[in-house]
Image (cartoon, rainbow, N blue to C red; front, side, top):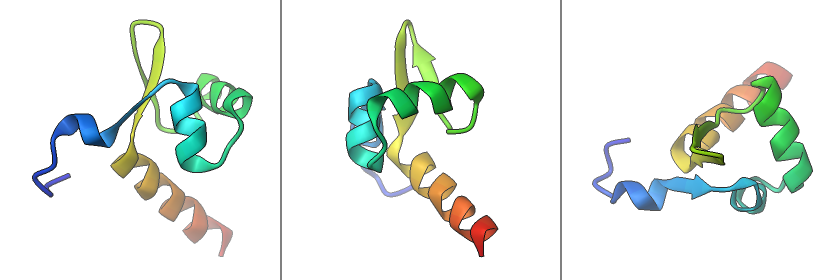
Length: 66
């Protein structure tokens, strides 16, 4: 990420925020995060993800489906 945005604008905090951004249900976010299927990390007990990383991950998933 080199677009000079503050880091806070790139971070999603919590399954609900990740779900709203990706269109997944919050329960699916928990499952995908627990199995390592979606790029997330934890800060304490909170599941977090970078928007930029999720966009890259979705692009890779699209490439695999083609």
